[in-house]
Image (tube, rainbow, N blue to C red; front, side, top):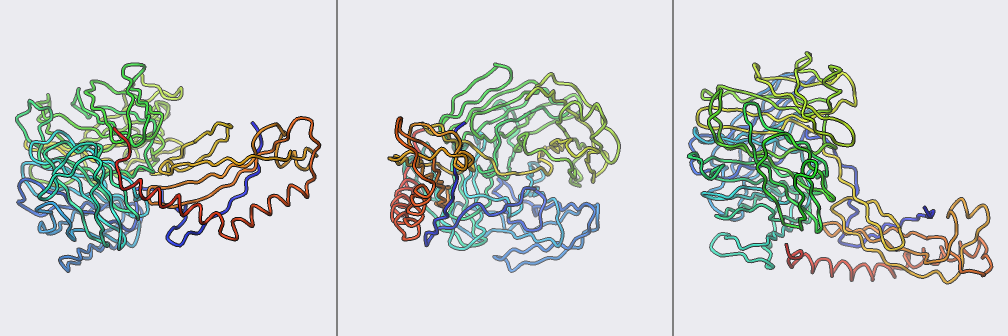
Length: 554
């Protein structure tokens, strides 16, 4: 591989900020912003479940629109259910100020449970503000009465663009493909959209981090079901999606549905060992009915959502529910499993996925004890994955590992005669990284929500080949030399990396180190004098203009 001399300049455009500041990587946290979506029937207040581990905490819940503030003391290693006024649930499409702010003195795991109706309930893991992003894709099911999308702003003056590849209804008008919906939100303000068509794949881009939620007011899963159920999840930002997933059914179920959403053009998705293969573009998705545990791999980051069937089971009744599934790179080595207390709930379960050797060596512990597991014959990167599906007999449980590299994910599933819930336990959310290669085999590693633009400038003079330069540049060869790499994020942030690649023309004499340094200094001067600023401002304007039209045909 040809060596590269990497020199980086950060271009500080007046309206732009470099996006690669340190981010949190856990779904536990101390600051959260959330909202609840609409239900067909609102009979009582929705609920938050707060869970602690080794530290007690003080939790403050604030609803600015209602001038509402409540403070709760939560002991260590416990969980607390708190309700918030049902008037915070949206009643119509549009912009409102329905954001809920949750602040904790120590890290907590937080779930929202929309139990405002006695006959239809679902829940979601609430993501802390330090893992939120600026690009999301919705996921829902074919609705009976309303597929839903909700967005909450974290910062004032946040510009929102909504793009979709089909017509949908917003307030009193239809929004058509290629005509994005443009909204500006201030902190705690919310955008709520409901549609009689499936909103899976609808794209949200924002100028600052936002929280996004999606689901259905009421949907039949399967379509032949007699039960119309509420479903909801908090969406994972595209910048933190993954490319490898293991999915499995919940305890007592044999069938389940997954939806796979693509965030970029040319995404190849494989399910199982050659069972299914799909080519997806941005805004596109695929829906699959599965009957066993499966491995899912993709060429670009994808989001995977799982839906349960409404059906009669051997040990009771199940209703439709949904949750996002963590990718393998998002697995964790500790999680809290907290279940809700409800007079109607009679069954609490969890499903857990991990490499088989973690179970076989008793590395994974439920409340300090090894757990039973089942083999799946599912392999990823030569590792076999197994599952554990168990009944929970306590409202507060911990899953820990005795080896730091023993990683897993877990999903909570609760069932009653009238409803079911599905919500993922806490997991990790590292930034997703992608690699872009240009025609000269220059590899650029970048965050997956960044677009890479590479400008190439010829090198009229050969690189030196003395020992000092060999250490810096590597082997010299004939070719082009200077690559200006522009990284454009969905929030219009720009970073510039300049790569100088060693080259020399055949038969020419080597040029001196000082000459090379002089040329590098000239490049630096171009940056210092703002010559590149003008070029990047043009790129920025073009990119902003591109955000105002459809992002390609889906």
